Each structure stands twice: as C-alpha cells, then as structure tokens.
Image 1 (cartoon, rainbow, N blue to C red):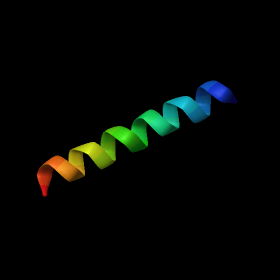
Image 2: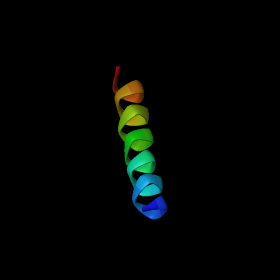
Image 3: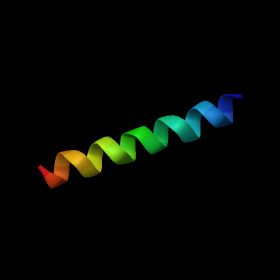
Length: 23
C-alpha cells in the first residue's frame, strides 16, 4: 500500500511539474 501511494504521488508530482513547465 505504501509503495502504491508513493508511486502515485511521484506520478502526480511529475504530471504537475510537466504542466507547470508547459504553461
């Protein structure tokens, strides 16, 4: 469960970072 949450958080962080850079 912890690993799943960690990977999910990393994915969200990566997506938000990409969107921030694209703007």
